[in-house]
Image (cartoon, rainbow, N blue to C red; front, side, top):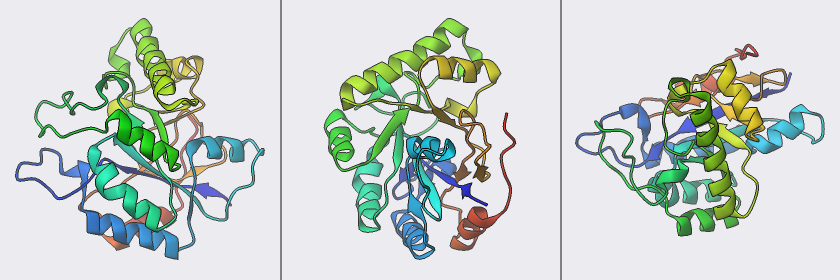
Amino acid sequence: MLTFPILTYHKVQAIPPAPGYLCNYVLPAQFERQMAALEAWGYTSITLEQWVEIRAGRQKSPKRPIAITFDDGYRSIYENAWPVLRRHGMTATVFLVAGSIGETNHWVKDEAQEQLLNQAEIAEMSADGICFGSHTFTHRPLTALPQTEVLYELMRSRTDLETLLGQPVTSLAYPYNKHNRGVRAIARRAGYRSAVLGRGRLNARWTNPQALMRIAVDTRTTIEEFENRLCHPRFATGL
């Protein structure tokens, strides 16, 4: 039975003195070991766009597909994660907050402000095969907004990113994992073919592509836990 794990990362860097949210960090050495393990275990990294095609039967799947994703678009992805991905023949999807490119994570007031990817870094990574998706325009929780603002957040982000990248943007990560049936419907209306959550389970062919589950990885994740989360036979329910 074909399953599809999706990994979630934020920052790949040393932990600062006052990290705020430890769950947002993975050490560079940890990330290196995890990517080496995926390669050794026979995983092939794919994009969410490729999964949509596989799910529809329009593209053949590798034996062990996996998606590697990063939320927010921190510069540490460029500095520390991207070189590791290249060494191990992996691709990834980075979900950008379109209204904050080149700025900092100002939407989090109680965490250290850290630099986000700028346009030149994004263009360089995109030319090398890294995929980019939307994390909305301002990183606000979509379930707390009127429908008109939800549509604005999703449409403005997608169109701005498409202008920057010169190619379609069809994947979305819901900020703070906030979504419901109405938000998912607006995401489809806004042109997104897939969207991901923050909770961790494996996906199956029948998993709703607007509610794909992810496996969170952080500095506390041992390599044994990493392997167990990839192999545990639990599937998303379909929503």
